[in-house]
Image 1: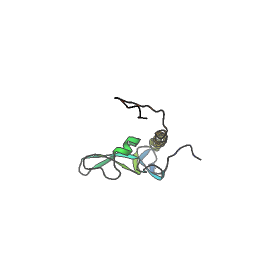
Image 2 (image 1 turned 90 degrees about the horizontal axis):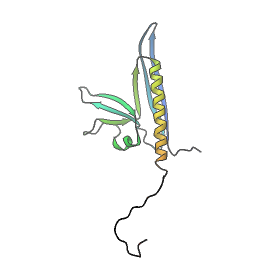
Image 3 (image 1 turned 120 degrees about the horizontal axis):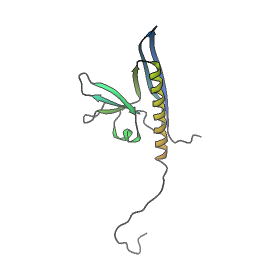
Length: 136
């Protein structure tokens, strides 16, 4: 049994073409293939108000991002939105490998944070005013 109450599985695909002595481009797509007790739309994007609009990958979401930003197209009053897939282009395969490692580390931290948010770290009581003797 897993120690975590949440889980996210990622799949990546690599694309690239190299000409001897010159790099043309490398591309990586990543998608959430399974999610347990968490919305699979964990990739945060920003849509710039250009014509046509340009969507830029920002980061793997935090728990606050999951609550604050909607999945799919951004709300009319917002530029940010979440998806379950991302598409990155880089100048080298090494850049994409670094990005993959960071995405996985951020995904792991998201799962750990969601898990710890379900574990109480203490209880506090605050009261103000008078209470009659029959109050618990």
